[in-house]
Length: 195
Image 1 (cartoon, helix red, strand yellow):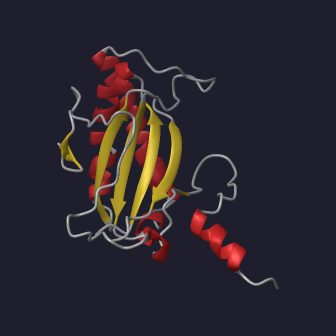
Image 2 (cartoon, rainbow, N blue to C red):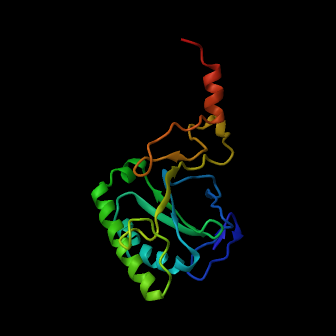
Image 3 (cartoon, helix red, strand yellow):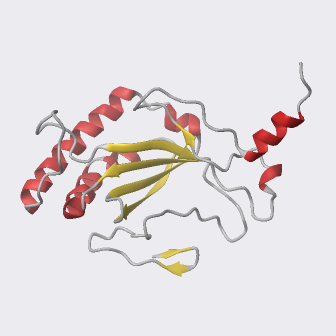
């Protein structure tokens, strides 16, 4: 596998390991075909990577392939933080967010069943659980957000309407907080006339 023209080693389960970080890649001509990238991080202990990948391939992968607007996804494992990182490419933000919560919950339940079965079959120790017990997700969500596509090559990011920072998506987790303004937003706010 290559990333930014450099070979990236694959671990035993075929997941790209990228020194604890992910990097975006634009086409050589600067064209970006993806409208939005869903970014997920899940807790995946080293001993459970194969079970995580197997559960992903048996649940989310076939379901995503049937979704309107789904363009593909990239899975990687961050060994430093023991997290699975998923970049899910969508043709539009509207198609991604139009998926009913009940449908997502059903696929997640199937994923968790497959994950528990794979952990047992592969002899991997189950990940640490909170008070939720054995029925809890063995690979809990750590982060959910989105990444806008990169602006075309040669375009000054200050001229682009795309924000460089990740934009939080509030489907799960704690109450949303206002993101810090980007450098461009700070400049615009400082230059705006007072009302």
